Amino acid sequence: MGEATIPMIRLYNQVLELDEDTFIRETQATFKLGIEFVNWGQLGQRYIHGFGTFGQDVWTVDFHHYWLRMWLAGKAPDLERYSINRMACRSGKFMRAASDMPNSPLSQIVHAFHFDAGLYAKFLRRYAEARGVKRIEGKISQVLKRDSDGFITGVQMEDGRTELGELFIDCSGFRGLLIEQALNTGYEDWTHWLPCDRAMAVPCSHGGAFTPYTRSTAHRAGWQWRIPLQHRIGNGHVYCSQFVSDDEAVATLLGNLDGTPTAEPRPLRFVTGKRRKIWNRNVIAVGLSSGFLEPLESTSIHLIQSAIAKIVTFFPDEGFSQPDIDEFNAQMDFEFTRVRDFIILHYKLNQRVDSPFWTACREMEVPESLNKRIALYKSHGRIFREANELFSEIGWLQVMHGQGLTPASHHPLASLYSEEEVLDFLRNVENTISKCVDVMPRHEDYIAKHCAAPKM
Image (cartoon, rainbow, N blue to C red):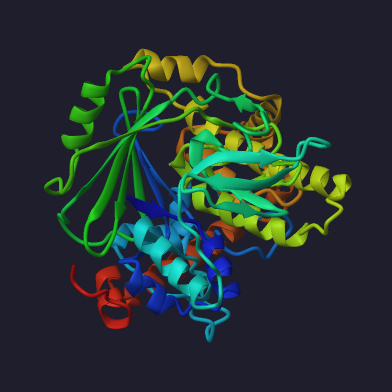
């Protein structure tokens, strides 16, 4: 499978001191500037959720309020004209941020990656083993627990070996071998908000240029991802089995590929939600064993890497302090629920009338935390980021605007300046970004020059 990521992965790679060009070559990666959403508002509509900033903040309130004032009056173009990431996506351009040009939009380019997940795993395995990590392979036949407190003391292998330990990281996927099967931690089911429960994945040959963005295309009862790598394209159809059959889902997937399939479609089943405790006793669940949120906003790998960072922060001694464990769980709960709300937003704001699935999503009750965000934006375009949640105000803005949520008005202080002053400001930002995109190289040319992978 191909994997799409978000910019925080660059920090993770930097902490490991990975050379970015080497990483890209080793994983057949391409660069990613955002995600294009097709048919999510209405059929035929599309918008890009781009990374990075919008415009330039120089006055009293955030940039988007000055744009909103003019856009509501019919005097400004769409929001994407003020984002170098989004305009570069539209032109198929890419370059890394120009750190030597601090006053230019070229210094504001923010990127992530598309890569082959299997190759990335092998790359990290080689990196870890070269630094002394010991890998023991085998199938676990029994989990050993301490009678006094239920802590896990070790695992017994099918060949009779016993591996003892003090702290266990459960990466056993959906089944949760330790966190659930051994400790009965429990699971919060969120399918009443996120009803898709299956996926079909298939790679295909390239059918054109390496687009510097992921694409998510909404279908009759779900959506399809498109992730361009250097050697192929990763594709998948996420869908709700209550509204479409597996055979129909496969037909939809195969009917919307850029090139020839290079494998048989692989089925996946899942229940959206999370463990009630991601850290229980001396077991910490990471990855699919901790929970699952569909990859609509490319958050799966980020949640893994965020858990790793928090494990480092709260790394225990032999006493396993319960306040530390509770705070770890609280922070992971906060991160999961805020990402959950952001994904729900895409479904809730659809205006499609072509299928019962989309009608049900539009009419569903959503968490109160999400209702508050929608209400704030609908009144005066206000968006507030809570604590250190993953998605910024700009991310929420792009989805709400992109899917047709229109505020009644803008921030009143955006009217402190004359209309002509604001329009001149907006035109200057738009023209500057346009000129910057013109000088950027094409995405595939940049890869060919700096980090082309060997042919497979």
